[in-house]
Length: 372
Image: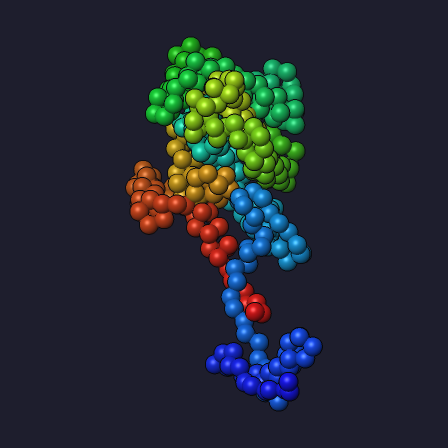
């Protein structure tokens, strides 16, 4: 049979002349170069081909995909490390350090609430125990801050966990009430018995060698805590934590001790809070009962609401949003609570998922043009 040319319409923008030849039982197609050949494109999400089956498993095939995954992390780390350099005022540099301390508390709260199922209002409890422990180690034993920080972290976490052991079988609002009572009770005990300096507190706590050490040490601690917790919750023990939160009876039926894993989780969160309290004592060169204040219990919760629970990085960013606003509103006195309430009301009504959850969704919805 001979050649029979015919025209096939592929789209509204493209016409191709194809010559089909039936020769020796084979079909051959040739494109007539006399016709305009245009190539169609379509939009494709940037994360297509990267995510496999879960949020934590990726299939990476090129440096562009690696960049897509690393870019948010690089921006976060670079942004935090550049803060002391771009902020000229010493006052606001100190505010950044305080925001980092609140960030440690928010990380611990988010970890306990959204990965273990324990709602803790004991931020002031952790801060106070860590602050007094660091101050006593420095004043009684003469240890420098670089030694009191790790010792106060471990010691404060151990003391807090032991005191909370009887409450570990509780869940929900009952555990939250117990953790809220501890800082209130300890502050009144110290005041009534006039121990640990009484209402005056422990004075003369050693400070850091210079302001650069003070600022960058807490920033590095926050970065390490953030990525360390993210890695922890994606390990096998993280699956157990989620099991304790979602179905503790199934965990118990598997032969695992629920109390043991709850104690481990409380130890981690208390360690973060105690480290923040120890750092706070060395920043202000003082430790007192005001470290048991309710602000250390309330602001981490508000930061989690604003930043987005269950993301870890969201509550951290929420602290860097709320703490500076708190300082800006300080001149309004008690009225700043009204502004705080309005901010929380707006986020709960119009952005209840939190800033980070919204930003993550939008980032993964970015598209690019690809050839069909």
